Amino acid sequence: MKKLSSMLSGKGIAILLIALLAGVGVGTFIIAPVVTGGQQQQQSLILTYTFGQASGSLYIPGSTTVLPITTEMATAFTARNPFITVQAAGGGSGAGYSAIINQATDIAAASREPKSTEISSATATGVKLLTWIIGADAIVVIYNYHPDLSEVNLTRAQVGQIFNASAKGTGPVYWDDYVPGAAHQPITVFIREDGSGTRGDFESDFLVDKTGTWPGVTKVTSNGLMISSVKDQQYSMGYVALSYYTAEVANPLSPIKGVNVAYNSSYSYETPDINGVISWAQSKITGPGEYTGGYFACRWLYYITDGFPAPGTIIDRYLGFVYSSAGQAIIDRVGYVSVEKAGLTTGLPYWYYSTPIVWN
Image (cartoon, rainbow, N blue to C red):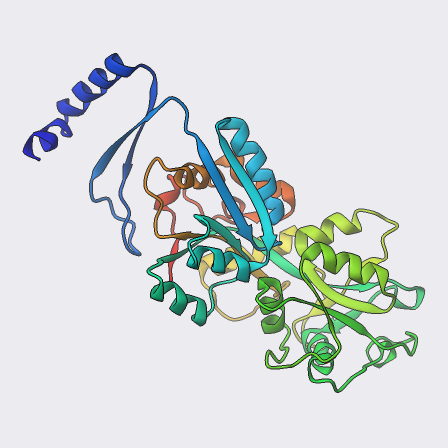
């Protein structure tokens, strides 16, 4: 042990590097601090030697909101690491947490924080739940455009009333109850599946009763299916992540429109865009505080791991790429707001960022 300690100090490291290079040829050296617990402190230096290029695979299931990020990230990451494969999958945030808790994957995606039941399950199975903030998003309330619904302005309380009526079975409610000049047509709502991060955040942001039983309401299992369901049903309403909305309304022929939402009657009606999400993210970084204006239905997006990745592992390499300038640019290009653009990153390696949150 004493001999190894002396080798890993000062001149000893240089001698060890030379010996390894001479003996086995080209490799990759990573010297990185070990991060433990919820504190980002340097304990020691670990020297990892990898023969040739890294190889292996990653399976990343979970949030369909994060899915476009993972799909694009996987393509760029594997182009730089040709012996690593990355498979992106959906299933919802609940499926992502379940996969980590059941140790069915090493990394997953979520658009919400873990529930107390998930934290308890992780503790029971010996899993250390960590979430890594990778970007920011907004939830957009969407509706099927009709000539008498050219523009829809609602407060968040009114949106909540519409969905609560469906949750409790006290509906239907009609468009002309909320939009002057609209037809006397019932508002058909679509919701996401149980465990969906988008559904959970929507219900919190728009004051929807989470104990509602939703009699007769159709549940859809992804953002993509939400878009197609609202498109196919006149006078319907739903909600999606910002990137899906932005991509859809880029088609001028799409019947999908976004509801202009006001926090309450004292504030202006707004439909979310990238600038609104940036403002929200920056306000969260500088201090949560109280609502002072802007689009409010925003949230962080996460990757989930079981504890801190060991230096040099594939998860470590993947997260390192996610937090690189190239990786952050992908998040912006997909239609979300990267933590780099929001000002959360500091230019240091990802394990130094303040983004990892330890839950148990």
